[in-house]
Length: 412
Image 1 (tube, one colour):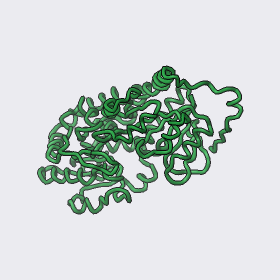
Image 2 (cartoon, rainbow, N blue to C red; image 1 turned 90 degrees about the vertical axis):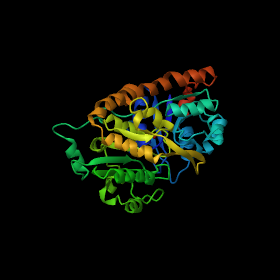
Image 3 (tube, rainbow, N blue to C red; image 1 turned 120 degrees about the vertical axis):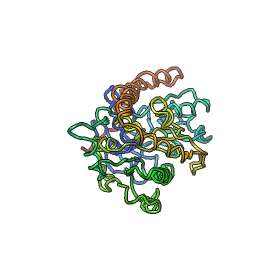
Image 4 (cartoon, rainbow, N blue to C red; image 1 turned 30 degrees about the vertical axis):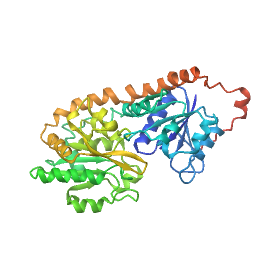
């Protein structure tokens, strides 16, 4: 099968970029021809990435180049990992049976939007990122739907502290004292969904109520993003600027934080926080778990099912919902319960969490042993059988079609 994957490119260190690296690799390994259409601009030209063509996007954000690549190089399926509500032209082509579309979609609000339902109804098959998302689709009447979690490389993301590289050394790498209680937040500072100021207020309340604990904060994000919050001002207003460390600007923007560096960062923290307004999945949650570091997260959307089987006591209930511009309703985490969860972790021996969190992550989210086989199964069996049952089977290209197909020139 010829699969065009539309998402963050594999060289991008975002969650979707990581997904692209792993998922495209699994599909190529299983014998599929995989091309990648990045949803961020670069071009013109075409590059080779691990034996797969990376098509040019052009300038600005638009679906047009992806659709042209799909038709020009005669792909069979478009796997689109993105917010489908933001796309428009693509669905008209699906209705015209010019594109076979499989959205891998984040559903991160309390009710699926009616216009999104209309779009997804024309998709060939929908893949949610978690059970919560699948339940949203099921309640909306979808039968052509399943879910596949994001994954984590448990060979890299794992507990590191050992005699040769103790936690004190890991903390020193982040410029924290050995006896500090370190709270980490790994979240892109984009829009309002990250709720970064609200999470920092929660930490401030914890500090005020527990002055005897030497609390420190590590933010793995852009401090003052043009489309996010001015965190420099927020930290100063809350009086947290002197105890907070932030990701290195150059490394953060240049993508220089390797998986090994991220694993060290998670290991240096005592706890990570993900009390955002919502999550379609929440890859930092399972990365932190794989490193044996507990996570405090909202008891809503995907976060509930990620924590419930292993650390339900660290789930923070919402106090209300709030409308966002999408438009959709998101959730506000309860301050008091968030502080209570921080106090629970601060007063618990870290060894209680380390081994069982790492074991749980490996059993549930490991890319190679758990998630990869699910992607192979979907494109080998689930999708072909569904399309055949619904008279949608993709025929093998004729010799004439092969002869007339556009040549693919790749720039190495």
